[in-house]
Length: 357
Image (cartoon, rainbow, N blue to C red; front, top):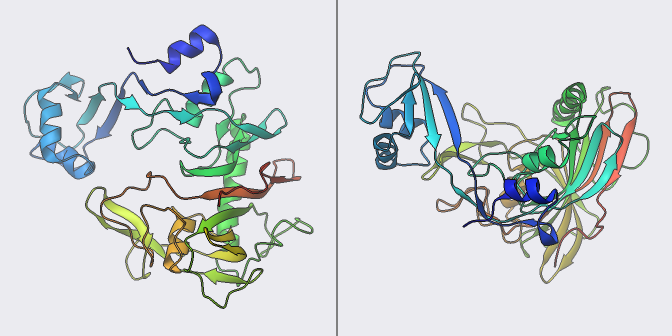
């Protein structure tokens, strides 16, 4: 019988040995949708809305009674009307082992900053429900009189490093706004020097408003950066990022030309720290918070993150891989963010190396 995370925590009040959650079945989940435009087929509606599953699989789920319309289970195709409410009762599924231990970098009773391990999803999505940082925080802090700290932003599953959480809803709103203002203020700045990003005074910004400043370390595939680029030299990447067709997901974020509706401007500044036989170590400051921005921008240069299974040189995505596939090395290493009381927090990950190789 599979090991149950919930039963472990209820019985032991602790995490499994060595800081990992073993693989386990969860309790399933209900996904709810509202039909906006009338449709002739339930399965076709779902296959169009969720292309990760083919039509035949949705037909099997319908026949198994997993899909309800307006609270009534369906077992055969039926037309859908605008305003119908659908619920897919997904049966329990297996979640792979994940790391469940982390270092606390800062905790003032409201704002909590942790050093997230690579391999731990932040929020439920993409097949992850219970084996996520959010669920672990809810269980670990459920008796906390100040409330449960909840993530303010995301890091990719295999991105390690500094992640900001907050217990109070007002603090989460404030910190989230700082992240958005950081993007707006820095997006069109001529350059954001990464090495000096957290040096010197932090009051104000390039445009007079408050900022959240984020610096990452990454290991790039060797030979991708310009041969003439030496340690300490920097360059700015402004490749737009947009959704393009993908056979498994329908659409996927990748490098774009900026000519299609929905393409987003993006800005990163990359500085070479060291070259080595295993790859080039770089520091990246992001002036916009686009999906998979560092992975895409480095690939757009012709220097993908070492081991990245998804993004090819040039910044396009492989047809047979997904964003959640691991193997790359990326770390949120330094952070400066303004608190609701106006003071700045300047934080750095405990592991100065951050990356292997």
